[in-house]
Image (cartoon, rainbow, N blue to C red; front, side, top):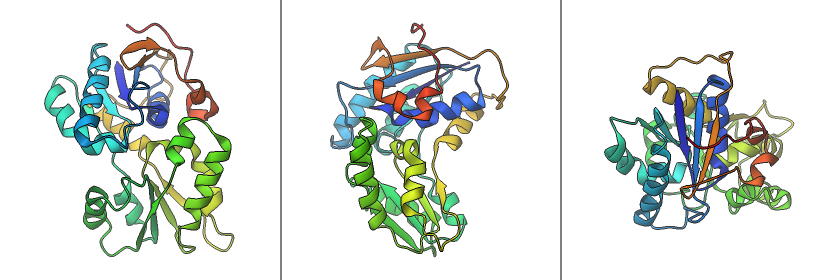
Amino acid sequence: MKIALMDSGIGLLAATAAVRRLRPDADLVLSLDPDGMPWGPRTPQDLTARAVAVADAAVAHRPDALIIGCNTASVHALDALRARLEPGVPVVGTVPAIKPAAAGGGPVAIWATPATTGSPYQRGLIRDFADGVAVTEVPCWGLAEAVEHADEAAIDAAVTAAAALTPADVTTVVLGCTHYELVADRIRAAVQRPERPPLVLHGSAGAVAAQALRRIGELPDPEAPPVGSLAVLLSGRAGTLPAAALAYAEGRLLPAVSPAS
């Protein structure tokens, strides 16, 4: 079994680690785009073109499924990638976990990139899945970029700024960018109020990994041996994980990179 994951940068690590935990025997192909990152400021057309190129590089390694490990790319490129690759390769997008977060009753804060905050896409998800629940959209200026470069001071500053915009009565935070899942503990510490119940965080990595297995007819098997291989593509070229990936537990979970095949 081989599963490919794609993103402009290391935001895909959360879903990669989730796949590894569910099926340690899966061979993984990570397709990143250092030549084109960040994708967020690009036009939808330009972003889709970059995403198609990154996906094509991954699919050349004949995966059983492809995960788009990026919220922004899922918004703009998911339909194009499914039209291009399915049914041969199932494509799984990443959607902010607003529905399960709202099921808890709220109040809910959605931490997302400034481009996503207030967008018709996110407002549609709130309308469809959080009707009647108090929801605050929180723009997280610079947080994804800080996480991408493992810049500790910048991460702290961005998390602190976003926490200041988060209402004190919030009980649940949706991590609306895959990069944010890599610093979930720091987000929890910044938002948690001593007088409030334990804060609930909702990311998408676990659900995305499980959906990829379902799409290819596989079941989770956390004890499955042996550990699968890992190949990394950098704008289509064989490479290694960026050094910043090792700053996070999800990156350190992955084994040494094997040659792409």
